[in-house]
Image (cartoon, rainbow, N blue to C red; front, top):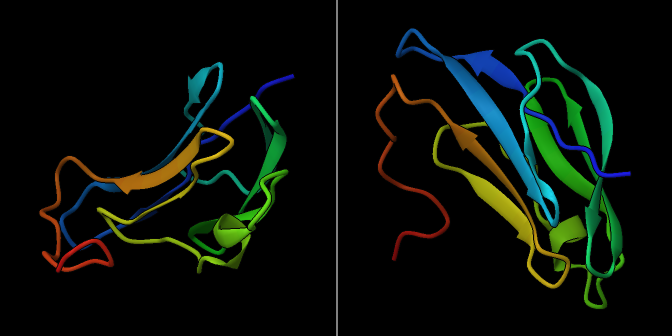
Length: 107
């Protein structure tokens, strides 16, 4: 079974920040106050995403190198984490708040 979630927290921009989880079979949205774990199906098996305390992180995945599991939790607009081999993406988005301009993908 596939599942995904969206989790949010309030930002200074006045809108709810959503954590969007996309998997092999689509993506799903959950309410702002959601908390818990979600099993997301990918081509290699299931990836487990944990939401807790206004943040999300991948806690288990069937990929070989486990970089996604070692990545820190995400919580701010524009942040993302992924298990690329298993085609699972987790991102934080807030359409009403501007990005803070710097993240781990900025060089």
